[in-house]
Length: 634
Image (cartoon, rainbow, N blue to C red; front, side, top):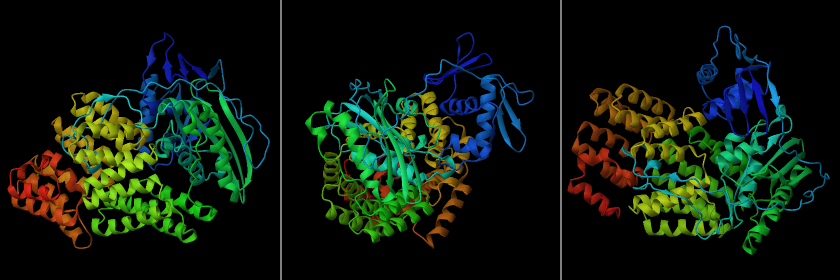
């Protein structure tokens, strides 16, 4: 792997270390290391701000001051200065240039995809390499009670503990990630198609017993032409990694793919394909079949079962629209969710038997609850209808059962049925992260702490780059007596997504505990600005204002909710939380009663949230949660 020398520094790409001449390491955050690597690989090139933003925050829209902070931090780490710079030169109104001479030391390029016959089927399978030993699972601190009930999805299990994980019944012996495919020509990128290839291969390979496949969400940060697959393998803690390139010209598509042994960097298989775009499904089948042929001999007979048909459709137009819908739904922004719903419907109109499109449609509706304060009774009516249609089409579709479990959990408050459904989804596909995460949240609500933590470990293992799971981990580290580690983990979230509002809400909770009231309020205000259609951040902000000597500002948020309520649904728990902070017992109880009647999904976390302690001793409070079947927690 490459090393670069400049000035007194040696940059080791494989070890992700920057050393000074005396061997002392210069500690860089992952974002700073990526930025420095981007510069030293392009010495003398003028890099404009747009190129740097796209490289360091792929697929994200971030403010330009984030780039300024990275440049400033790099200069401090290198002992550089803006004026008379030796390394990073500012070109006014244009960008930046790395001006120091750079020498490549002992270059050892990663293996290239060897030429293979350009056929409509996969290239020949190489002789399988010995399977690398399973990577020792890192001990991770898992989800527990959040000190202030920061967010709905952060309503975690009541005890985190250290434990490794393997999926029950899956007999996992190896781990795999599929990276977004790179563009052959950067100027003709099709990001939806690049992610779509990875998404479809993940869906196929996830059905291999004995293989834990990282979710497509966990590899999103590795998109783009500059990806380093072996670095990604280390970050994701996997033994094998699939990467490749893709380019479309009209009706023609060219794809290269390879399976890399993460321990050695050697290609266990590679292939090159020229297809008509209408042959994409055959191409995906060919790649997944070749990968499974390399892995399956090491996994036993169960690993050789038939792979799932990707996408659930053979209509190429429906498939393209489905990929676009998934792309729009990745965040929890109202506009993207609304667009994804429309696109899923278009895909279904083209192929009424497209089961995964129905699941996606149900999931986008359900995300409206969290991201846009969707009215539960209306939203879940749609979500349930689409999920049941998916199951009718494909009775063995794990994703559909995972979605049904969420409906039974958040809408029906039918704890027993939800548990059975989540278990059914996991039995069908132990790599179904949505079901694992949902099951963990359900067990949390039921107060079954050890089981809940185990399921959250599953979700964390499957999706190690998940923003919400990383936020939960940082939150728990902080409240378990490791505040420095908690802050450091939260910084990883901001490195991935500077404006992730749940992380800013979590930071605000930490700062409140540290009595840094002004900073905490500022962080919560930023969360509120970025929360789009959700009132949850404003509710937490209002409670913080009310309990820290700013009741008038808290009441102003109640007025805001009242105004919003004239035109749309606002969860009763949002105003109730502010009333609790203001010490208004009757208004708080009235809000909880309305929340129960409206099936407000945030009612499921109230028993764990200390901010509601004002009314815990009231018989009316106990009665509400007895009706919900949570009397033992009330």
